[in-house]
Length: 598
Image 1 (cartoon, rainbow, N blue to C red):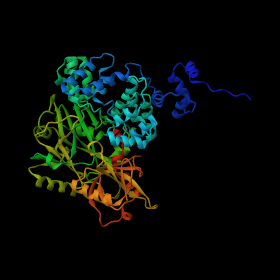
Image 2 (image 1 turned 45 degrees about the vertical axis):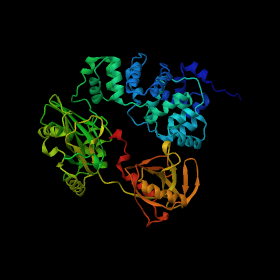
Image 3 (image 1 turned 120 degrees about the horizontal axis):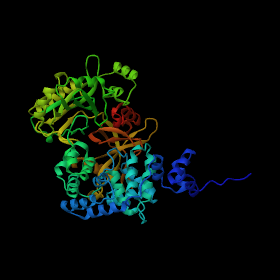
Image 4 (image 1 turned 135 degrees about the vertical axis):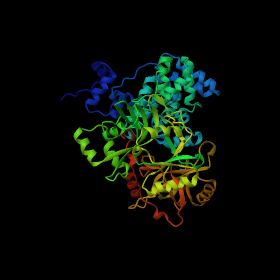
């Protein structure tokens, strides 16, 4: 019997014409990306790019952008950074949008699904360094990019700008945590130490170069000799990278960018309520358990845009009919779509998902869903009316236009409050009526496109609380190195006598930190480079904004922004909540549905 020797990569490339085609043939033959990497030594991230039909160009070496970053890092003045960025923008090798995205540190607006834990594990995989050592360096240096730089061995630069750009843009499509670890570690493995530093910072969304988007806009204006006001206006309407990219097309092109119906406008967003941010009198409105919806009207044409800019007129024909009743030739109105029962009372958000997911429905199925789930609309702002932009006007003036355009039955309910007593009274009334809470708005504020501002504040009750125990005190980083700065929380398994971690709580009052530090010293059972392990004796009740699935903690879940409500001296560790309760709370919360599908 003869033994057939499998073809080498070189032979496959000769047979199929390119590494990309050779890889695709291996995928068709049933090989996994991991097997192909092991057999061919082609980096995992390149294999995944090939699988998506992407062949990165060998344009400018990525090291050239890293050199720009390094020069920006040593410049102290805003003017110096602006000049350096302007020089970078004048380089003709790359499209301006690509340069703008690298300058902003935002390669894509989609979530990369990459957090600190995944980056640490990827650095460990890429460098062969034990994860414990990576974590120890994080305590000492306090920044992931620096740790990647320290651990990466010197190598020759091989990455191109396009390879890094396309690799990062593909990350949101990778579903599994392990996939993303292999992908990020592959990219870091072929990078130089300096490249690794900035790849990590791009992945975490912070270049740490000491400038803001306004500096990037001014640099583009200087590079292409156009008024910065025009770039700012284009960015407000189109988005930062898109607006800046028009600078290279000149004054006339920028001047053409006008707000107009049919072109999605990024909505203004609200911060969580903070009493000291409120400037009375305010406009307070019921917070509806629905989904943001922008209504655009131009004559007989109607467009409906979700918060992410997805056009929804085909799935929400009732709202199209409502929009036709608006008393305007052209307008852009901001508001909320939500499900209602037969009596017109608001229903929970998850009911409305039946009407918004999926994005397109066959006529028969749409009719069935319309019969099952009724929806309506409430408008709370107006951005454009009959050829006139209104975003620069204060809310008090915009409301006058809104009242003229939108029929009363489709206006968001609310009141003006002169002080905190009136505001809290309205808040209590909102909760009694079954609303999520209220939104508090500064009457003097303009509409700030695409910004999360303190001129809009959302006030709603905290979610269910979780009773848990403290199992570890963690040292701080940087200035707080060696001091306790956060505490690891855990819940129990009802069947086994085990505790499973669910998150870290920090930013506690000084008095609470002192009290906990004293308890830690009495109950500590061991230590590592990250902090001190303690005997679980302290039970705390915590609230949170959301529960997320994660592999960061042993429970498989993480509390987002946990806060200690009180110490439960009346409870023992055997009485803390279970992983089962955490799982049920996660399943009940509607936030787990992906935003892009809403």
